[in-house]
Amino acid sequence: MKRLEPNILRYESLPSTNTEAIRLASEGSAEGLTIVADEQTAGRGRLQRTWISPRGAGLYVSVLLRPKMPLDRWALITFAASLAVSDALFAACDVKTDIKWPNDILAGERKICGILAEAIDTIIGRAVVVGIGINLARTAFPQHLAATATSIEEVNGYPADREMLLAQLLENLFRWYELLHGTTGANTVRSAWISRSSYAVGRRVMISNADEVFQGVTSGLEEDGALRVETETEGIRIVRAGDIVSIRPSSSSPYL
Ligand code: BT5
Image 1 (cartoon, helix red, strand yellow):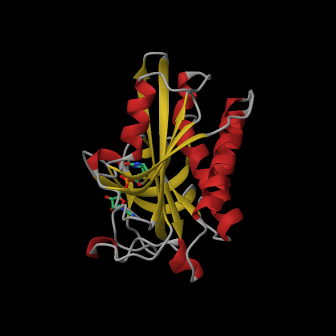
Image 2: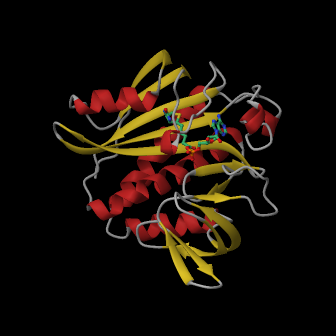
């Protein structure tokens, strides 16, 4: 598979880079389309949550992918993107990160980046838009995020070079994406993710999903990236949708 080249479109302000990428994807834009905005007025997380995206304080980017691999591997694209963010933050900013299932990148146990991968049907086939928000500068996060969010500036004492970070991010994203397409790609991505996440194995967690909250100890990933959680009463439970919510030593937000 040939390494992807980004086609970068830049905007001062957008409601959401994911929404714009989805719009262009549905008109048939090619893989590698990359939308970057200085601010988002309606940045989104999963389940209609908001991604706070003040002007100039973050890297808000969405990349269009048109995977050529079996559909059952597509869920691992978020995991490949997490690995790419972790590599890019280290290479460009010297920031060491942890990964919290399924899509949070943490620095010092606070959220520095969120990832939102959305699958869509387009006129030339099914595609994925991977949206990545990385906090660059210290901002007045709203009260409810003050204790759980962080930025590169807070970690390093100075803000990041946005262009260098973007270049590293795209290079690493395309590298992990290409790897994922290989015959052993799914295994490679899962094992790399497990080795970089303190949440992957042996961590006591509380899981919250649409129906319930329950506790257990993490026990790795299923083939498709679902989290395995060993519970006292029901054995191993497989979590495909939901969040890990607080359990010591992490802080008390539901979105660590
Ligand atoms: C995510 O959702 O973490 C995915 C965020 C993806 C954002 C990118 S930015 C570029 C692209 N365009 C978009 O519109 N979105 C993508 P989730 O796991 O649901 O977490 C959302 C939660 O994170 C919120 O409910 C808050 O608690 C918290 N949060 C919101 N803004 C934050 C920020 N700037 N920093 C840290 N935490 C934040």
